[in-house]
Length: 392
Image (cartoon, rainbow, N blue to C red; front, side, top):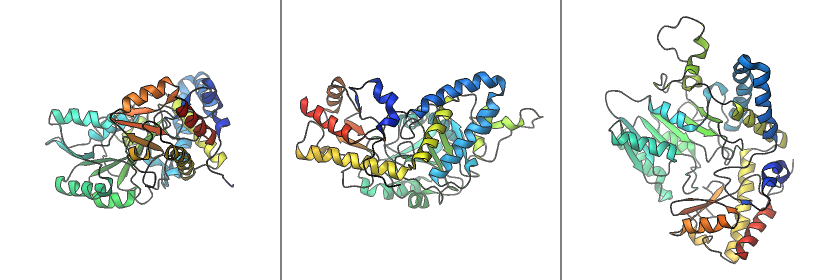
């Protein structure tokens, strides 16, 4: 299939786009619009609950989730889908990973200053009470980040290394995960890659690091399925018995006599408890739609790059407000970036408020305003954005 970039898939998102036709939503990195196929999926979740009642979970865990994990595994180049486990949010995974630490001393953690709040807040709070020993490596300057992270890991010999595939507060992307893991992995050390801003935003191949690194992501952003549909790849042998454990982790043993607390050996050892299954229905519908449309993460990324270039060309011809090439945290000519642009300014919050009042949805993190591009955008949307900016 010949694809002309940027794509025009606006019709596939008619429900979200049509809900407010004046809204210019450029926060695809934060809350991505859902394609229309998710509406029927949401209704099917309800219908299955009514139809199956007590037998619903046999269907959810025996048919819906296996279909989802098989498609996730294909996108991530994983040979064994059984290494994947679902959860309503990545915070659950963070806490189960943290529960694998030693009891006789603080858990040693090396991370970065670019990790999302679900990890940052929890680990900083534990560090206050001496439960973990936290070493934070600055992400900037980006050119030396990997070397500095590897040096910190060598010096601290941590139990856990946590690093994002694409940093949420800049958009800088780690483009060679294999080389990174080669430098920081060790026996019994948990290496965790937060892929939430990378999954379905950049092509991701875990095949050569699947035996050494965890990978966490979900449906809220570029997987376009909304909240409640997260997942984690779990390398064999790492964290075999998390202390934070839900009753589903022993689901196969509930009807028999248990000795001790049994765990699965695959990804299911990190399973939690009862959850809202509708997110998995939506995620299945999205992944099946992508198959039908012959869309993969590489195409999604090229589409976003084309829209980014279109927008920045207009801004370079005639800058407006915060949207200057000089304000970009990751320059447009740097291929190591995600699907959003980050602009730095002391007045970022003021610019966000002004844009929001004009019906332009972005988001702000401190002194950085982010502008995201997704599959629901086309070239006309960028032209509308530029025109509205010029009119303010």
